[in-house]
Amino acid sequence: MNQKHANFPNIMWVIGALIILFGITAFFVIKWANVSRENIPIYGTLPEFQFTERSGEPFGLNEMRGKINVVDFFFSNCHGPCPIMNGNIRQLYDLYESSDRIQFVSISVDPARDTLMRLQEYAQELGITDFRWLFLWAPIDSVADLMENGFMLAAEDLPGGHTVQFVLVDNRGRIRGYYSGIDDAEVELLQEHIRIIGRELP
Amino acid sequence: MNGFIRLTFISTIWTYLLIFLGGLVRVSGAGLGCPDWPKCFGHWIPPTNVGQLPPEMDPSQFNFALAWIEYINRLAGMTLGLLIAATAIYALIKYRKVPGIVIPAVLAALLTAYQGWQGGQVVASELKPLLVSAHLVIALIIISLMVYTAINAFRHENRGFNPASEASKLKPWVFGLWLVAMTQVAFGAGIRGGLETLGHQFPLAKPFELLSKVGMITHIHYFIGAVLLVIAIFLGPRILKADSTKSPLVRQSAKGIIHLAITQIIIGIALVIAGIPQLLQLFHLWFASLFIGITIMLYSSLKFQKEAAS
Image (spheres, rainbow over the protein chains, first blue to last red):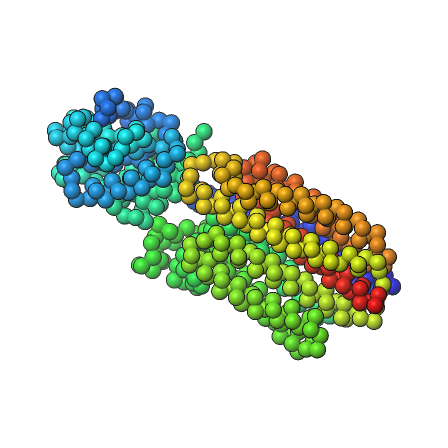
């Protein structure tokens, strides 16, 4: 009677062996996928600098540390790419509304016209009332110097010829990526990279 | 084992492999590893570097690891399609007059073909949570049909041997267990989808913060989990005791259900405590599919005995 039963293989052994084999494989595959995705390069570290925020408060590398920073360059009188760039920052600004781990830093490349007063107005026009989005002022020479030697971006034909790149700076002041601020796909990639870097935050 | 049983057995194992691979795609975030379907970045074999991408494809989407993880799932899926098609054809030839074999075998083949197409829809929808969950539920129905076919074929080949057993009375309970387990998987997939959606809304939130935002559905999942555990712990030993024939099939599956129910509760709790790590998530899903298959195995083996009793 029991001989008939014995025809059926002992499935539990098969399953047990598979679990161990699959588990080990899966462990490495997941690791592989995570590493492949989180491989965000470090382009360099920003030097110390000291600019002024629209509020009049000093703002420098120290204020960037501890947070994820999305940096861009603009001037208030710009009607070319700036509105598109602002629109994209705005989208991220709204997305991270509930988070104090990220801030947006816009640096004026036209300090002669963009006085602190003008920057305050500009922020108001954009509807920005809190300090998750910051607007920085510094003499043009300092701005150009930081652009070229810190952010490694061209600083020619300012203000009109300013870059449209968004620069991702991590919580330790390191540059982690450049993304065209007028290209939706690149802004989406920026968002993905923010999420990954966010996981590294304490 | 005759050729047909061997084939259904291999197809069933392969289906489990595929469910595992599908879960792996899900937890490793490789679902959009190939943004097009059925090809991958315009090729039948995924490109190895960005330079091979067709010009209209966005290079920032390309990730070698993710493309291959997704593509291996597709290859294994195609293989399963062939295996199950062979099983169905075999059944149509050999067991044309045995509805208990031919119907589930053909249904499984049709459903597998649909599943392949539906997988393309999942990719096209950019992983809409509801479609991802449906993809999983269909896979579990396929696995149930395969196990049912295999046991029925085994039973058919041994039809001269018909033990009577009290345990067969408990059969409706086992089917009920299967239904509850399927519901439970759907809720589990719902939580996973909820986490996904919330992850986009609150990108910098920690996993446990997200979990608390998912809401009611998590509590339902915990509750049904407890119910499943209670049923398994009460039903399993009763079946073992009532099965006077000492059928190894019944014994293995009844024990399997108890062990898996306990394991799943432990993994479930660990998931919450550890912040939903990927590997645990994968096993939680895969053990759920084993539980479903073994429940059907138990159900069909008990059916075997019921016929004997009458």
